[in-house]
Image 1 (cartoon, one colour):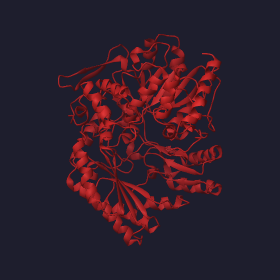
Image 2 (image 1 turned 60 degrees about the horizontal axis):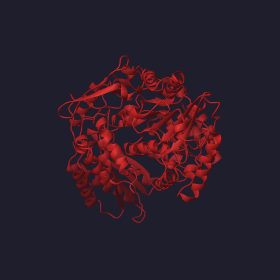
Image 3 (image 1 turned 90 degrees about the vertical axis):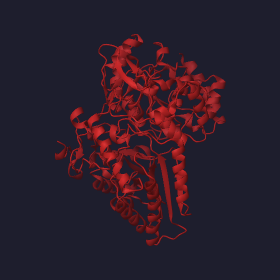
Image 4 (image 1 turned 120 degrees about the horizontal axis):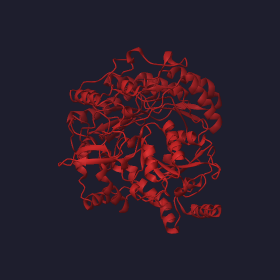
Length: 633
């Protein structure tokens, strides 16, 4: 395609920017963004985030992969986000294709289109972006002239609902895997599409759905997912990064040109979590824990401040308060950057006094609230879900918070958890009242004391001990929300909850198989977009799509699987053994907690032995060496 044509696309887009709500979403040209010479670069990759700019630019994985690919001399990566409704309408009216931010070239001109799958409710946006790009929705309809469409991220651990639309899935962590995919594409360029896909299928961590056949039992359950070609693996094992302290990290990330959800430096202190919450998919799929040394992090933080101009560093991980070198890291950061007017924040706190003391130390300007996640209202249910938090822990944490001057506390809970009873719901209200009492005892005035209770609905996720469990029906969720609302009538308590219909659809897609593709495509054709946004979500559209395609969504969301059933995602190996997941499920039903493997006995989850990977824990809290605790060996 000629350069004149490309300039025309850019000019057409410019003429539309003053007609949309937030033109900065589509402007590009941000500080630290990279635009390479198109003609001099071998492989062109478009990274597609299926949500708006301000959500996608808050995603650390985007920054990491953007850095990883663009540091190669033979490849480039540009970004594209889902256009909001106003821009989509103008694009369709003017015949404007989906364009990347950096070069404003059509996505269809790229060799590889790489989607990230962070949330099931973005699936219709993926179809919409493919359509806007002029790429056939179904993989089987694409020709050698179309980009290779790949996808990765947490939702790729059950790829089946999207299997008909994606050419290849990248399972696990992408820093090394994206390079392997680019190398394979370079080696296979010019070959027919099937030969290229066969080459990709030979890469560890790559799943090519076209090479697998799904068979079903008479009752509709999956009988098997088996390869149909020689040399295709039976199971696809996730990829993970080892030597995490030495892994490359972007110290010159793109600085967004508008406010985004997380508008600050994101410093990844560790990856993985050993807490073992039984509902948490992230805690399962990102094992084992790997930490970076304080020395590495302080150096990265200093360079990030110099290269971005941000005045806040957020220490990100699944559980940052568990990072072994937290104290030396915080001290070192404050010593190095506080004089530059830069603050440090912890996005995740344990419900204990240590975390509160740490939050008080790192926050230069005290914020209006602290957030804790007891998850369940009673100790019995917290033992069921393996949430290692007691009422005593919470009391000590909120007492320390109120004593240190905080006036508001947020509490996060889940409803609809396996084995939940009415007593557990009463316990949520009881904990809220207890927190109010501790605030009063600390002398916080009634007019200033605030407690926010936020409840989400349990959604069973693949590769967790609760993957066999059904989720509550819509009626059950609504009843529980109404019951809690009746209990939480104190004016000092703000009660928030998630849309039950959105949670239900998340459950349908998280447990789905390939047969959902028809309903997914139909919902998109009926107008579904941005299903995770309340102002866009229309449950009636989905109901119509299910009806027209003969799909029973409740069969997916509300079915209780047995341990002997073949699950739609069983051919994807997250590293956890089935024996471990079954054992954890049974312990949950007996309300038996399992100790954190950092300080207790190894639970034999299977990751260390099965994948040949070991936890990388910083010895001594920060001498720069990653070591493995003796009890894990």
